[in-house]
Image (cartoon, rainbow, N blue to C red; front, side):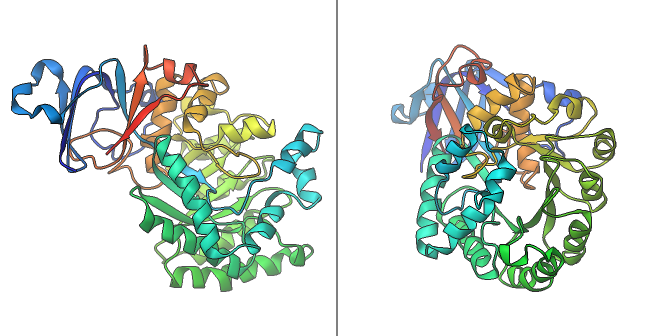
Length: 409
């Protein structure tokens, strides 16, 4: 608490008023910044900033002044697609991948989502919370300022509620915004292997009302993919949340295209996530919509699948966000600096385009655009103070370095 006056900031990054809408097209090229800047935080709120030449140090006590010469200050990242609540890691599947098994083949032998579901059922809610809190603390210390966390590893009502209650406890335990997503339609339990329709009906008509009754979800999601759930399942879920406070998000086009993107747009999905596969119809649907495309490059990196066509989406006016997809099976990393680097190297986004996708647009993908993603007077979120670095582009360029000196606010 109290007041901190940061002086001689090499560059103060993403200085702009909260954006009423996500950035699109050429808007993504610019990241407003102030060189040789100061920033004043009082009682965890940004109260002033500007050029050093406009600051009178005589107004402040010496113990309030912090010289950060050579360092940058950035708004914290927003991560709009994670599965941070899980029981344990799945490094045995990492070895399976090295031996040549595909994601689908690992799932067929009892790995994948079914593996995580089994492990969720074997631990208590308190232990699950403890593990998730430990992970979330590490995420915050690496520059996370807001997060969406999904359920989906329960595959039964009892276990899904356990996961969602853990997310609710995390909301109260940390000082960043957390959005909770009910992903009941993530995979088909073995008991319903040959009767998917009955499982969808149970989730939509029985599980969802209980989730809503307890106020455990801000969003609902579905894994709309071949051999998982289809467009009809998506429509059923969307119809079930009409006249409720929750909104729709959709995992789609990770491995195949079959109309899921267009249907998600038709159903007014807030976001469509993944899009490693994309056809012209999908692109045209998104270009005409307000739906945000949330892209997950570290998942592509880990699974060895195509990277989503970020540049094509951007050039067609689609609002794109970048997120980690942090989970134990297909993206076991929460490092958003790495996501930034991958977006530049593999998706050919500029450092500025990728940073806008990780901040302002990712904030909008969680409906936090009015409070997060940029630095403005009244900002109450977290800030990243970097180590001494030569330039803004050096951050994604030097992807193996830890760039965080300290998390502020």
